[in-house]
Length: 341
Image 1 (cartoon, rainbow, N blue to C red):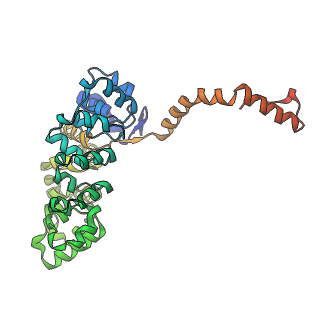
Image 2 (cartoon, rainbow, N blue to C red):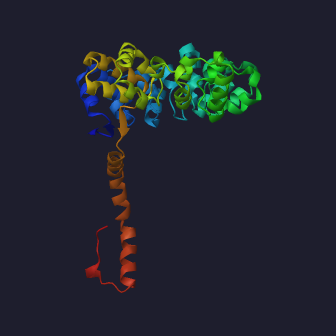
Image 3 (cartoon, rainbow, N blue to C red):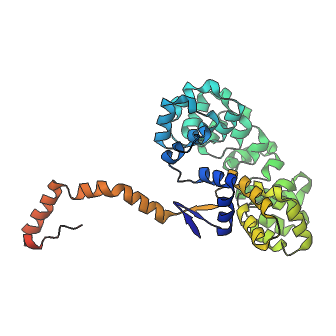
């Protein structure tokens, strides 16, 4: 695997494409999970959206002092717990797209903000939100539940089981909870017309259902399934299925693990480089599957930052004096004292 700073490219061939395509390279820059505030602020022109979603305290302080750079949609994706005052101060700038992002967040500060300002809640998005605080907020507003997205929410299974008659089976097709999978299997045997195969094919925990019911299988829909790579890979040997895969590549952009499929197709040279570049750009917008964190390099960088402070602390005169006294008191000779760490 090729390395680049604090990230590792999982697929060297993909790395080559990204670094040779300006748009892909730009997207990859902002996708780097180790992107620092200084790197972000020194890249001109400053990307207000990326700056507003950067979780560092430095970014938050910069936005407080330079509000013209605040992008509310980016701020709605920020995981820093210090964004509360900014949300309150600029809440009049929240539009419906910002409400979407706020309602999808798991930042407790954002959830507190929505609880205080419920008119900014996008209930469809909140009903699909799996974080604990979102579920609690929904439980306080049962009458606001939109049952289709809520039925897809694996964290809401206890509420769904108490409201069986309100379950939306199309939504439940996307629910990954083991109990939901069990209910779907039973429903297929009892009343398959209530099952939406398009959504069931996307459910990463419904693979066994599809295998046990091959009559339900549709490779076009299955291309959206994040656990479907091994099965799709096998279908590439089937000319009919391969033709279907090639004609429905746009479905891959909804698959969080699509980079495996893209890399395989690139190796086999079964789609053009231009199409690969287009798919990668979409992928970089929704997934970090292209990268892994280089923890070894991150550790070295962290140690490099801490090293001066560590040295100053260890070799502080007071501590050195205590070390020498301890050494001498235990029979050591000053001439033999080791001043190294």
